[in-house]
Length: 138
Image 1: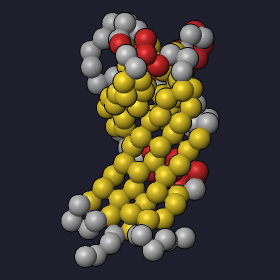
Image 2 (image 1 turned 180 degrees about the vertical axis):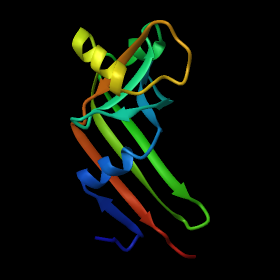
Image 3 (image 1 turned 45 degrees about the vertical axis):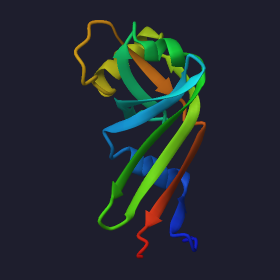
Image 4 (image 1 turned 30 degrees about the vertical axis):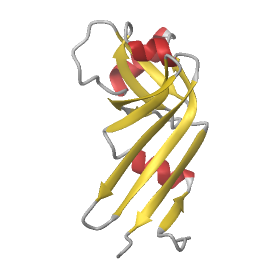
């Protein structure tokens, strides 16, 4: 349904389908009691969790392991005044199970940064919301 403001709410499956096409999104979390946003490359796991690979010693891992975070990805076309945004909210956790880590080493995202101590972080897709801007003239 398109609202009079030009936005259309996306259902969970539409949101996940759009996320699956994107290589980069943003983790939204708290760092030293302040909001922080960090762009990361990612992939979706088979259960719709957002998965990223980062350094075990990173500030990001220390800040998000075991806490609820948001993850956002979008795609906008300024000339058409159209696009979409999807937000996944859920608990983030470092993958510690060796079998799961091995599976993600084969199927999960590859960090764009060189590293020797990479870990996978899963963000559970507990809440998935999105909206599409359908192109407003004016």
